[in-house]
Length: 468
Image (cartoon, rainbow, N blue to C red; front, side, top):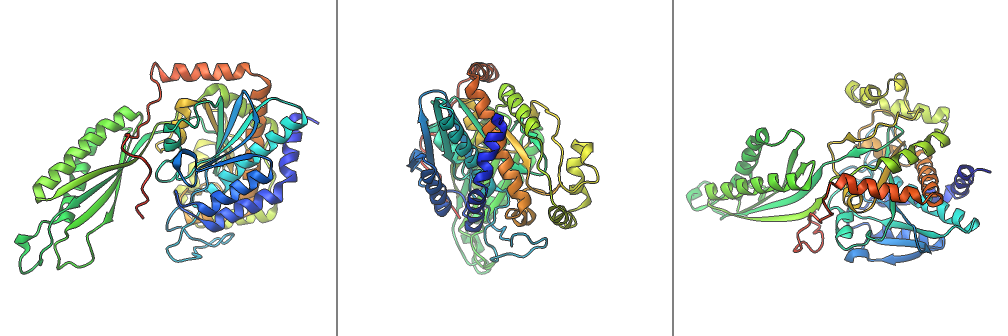
């Protein structure tokens, strides 16, 4: 039996248990830093599988670590398990049907992500035991990827500093190696404070915090022309100061995401936005408090590791799909726009006319993705590689009810378990060829171009604050 076959066999033997874990996390649908049930379930499963579990990592209640073995090398698998607000949806149903109005849902598939990484850790652990292979396997339970950046807080506390290699994945619509540079990101709250007054009888006595928010947003919109084209700035008004038009709003708040290819570029844009906020306060006679709540670094790809992961992906191939799975994919795709349906086909013409990706995309190193992830902070410290497996019908956008609906189906479970097999096989190759670790570390040093990792989080930001 080949290494790949044995690792796959281990995961298949635990298929039902892993699927149950994923489905329970889907059902909990807990948002960032509040994933108490999800974290407890994963910790319980790690303990049952013989891992030593450490809770409250980096002073975060829902961050944890499962460890097996000792000594070098240390191979880390990164797991996520947070949901998104407002995306409650019935599983397996190809039409909008919230389980709870306004409730949460796993619209990015992190119930699958955390469990797929767990599958890889368990498979590698079992194989190492069977073959007396030395080294350490770690599973990192990382909260708050969607908002707050749990890995950034964990990285600042040094929890990844002794790791040799980090591997992770993400559910998607295609099969590929995620060799992507991402954007660094600052998450900032701007809270304006004014003075209330009767909006009709004495408006001159009031100072509108909502006016300040609106003026700030207008100013930032004018700024967009004068920042680098790769940058992204978006906002949400999180407090409008009340629902009565007849009161001058004394308080208002807006949340900004500021993104750019490097932390230094993000910092520059952030400072310019802070100046605009102060200007808005001056114009309205209000005060502004600026709260940098979280920050993420950009991802540094690692071709050395990605090439190994791609080779293992090719060896393992693609799962086969049943007529029922293909039919479900078709019904989901009927809810998509024509533009959405074309996205994946534009990248790989072999997918034309299909509903589920059944091929592996060519390996394309060093692509760019205009998004952000706290995996970036890990990648600055440790050589890191990521893959994507098809867990959703082609063209399905992330952060949608369609992703939530697919998250409990056999289609999603096949992609999840397959990702575990790919990561486990990649890790085993690295364990058996330690020179690859040195090559990957040398590449990371070269890509950092003289820079060392510096946390983008200021020292005064002790812990992410849950605002809603």
